[in-house]
Image (tube, rainbow, N blue to C red; front, side, top):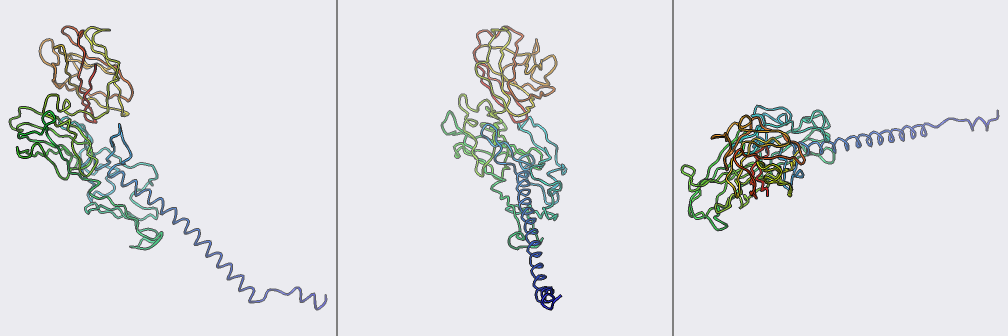
Length: 405
């Protein structure tokens, strides 16, 4: 081996070794930072998605509608307020001690805890913690109410993935002023009246009454009403000695200033919409009415049920031409009769339901979505010659007044 060949086999110099070590360290650091940044990016995105789901669970998803009307108001809609700070986010999964969900026959809508309000859809198994496994910070007493994650570093403030993530729920998305105008066949109402408004407070039905003076020309309002399905009842000239009542009229409060539709507050002929029942959950299928043709003692019809399940709790009917009573209501193969199936409404001999008399079903009937056939039956005479039936059905979404003709 020559001296030249020995030179060609020489090792790395110290400088070269140091350069390799330095470059390897830089590459390792860049790789770690890149991986860490990618993890924080994913955690940041999943935390934002979960916090948006928490907001929807608290005040409802504004995109969920039935018949063009918002149908979802979350915990707020059922209870009448956000959870207290002591109840916290756990109130979305377990009843925090408020009344359970129930159908109220006075207000004609359901209220009470109907959770869990948050499941799946990008929500982690422990939705009280962000994706860095730190508890969310919430304050439901402020305006706006807030849910906060401190970000990747868990400290106040910061930038990029370390910045605080805050979801705000202002009162403008929770509370409304509800306005109404009593009229008389479309003209301003010039008398006195009392108006009851029904909504939940801590899951319990609350009735707030306001007096309408002559000088108000029928105008009334209620402040600080929680968003959701609500109802109102009008008494003229007063609640203590009414000569006319309208309602309860059912409506959905979904904006900061809400005006009750005027068809629910008209005291004139035909006003009030049969009590303002227009939940849209049950509709009459046009062209299916049979007035005593197939069976002379029956008015037969087909109804369309929109929600997955409707719980029917009562009926009331009115005829246009004939004067008849009813002793049986049948829908989707289930009979309700005065001999057994109504807790109120039946009277006389034979036991039957007069026109314009509310009758309560016992037990209530669950009806699934789709077209459902039914009829009412009279024990006296026939329905031959009748041309129109007004049927009001009370259910867990409120009530619907159907014109069957």
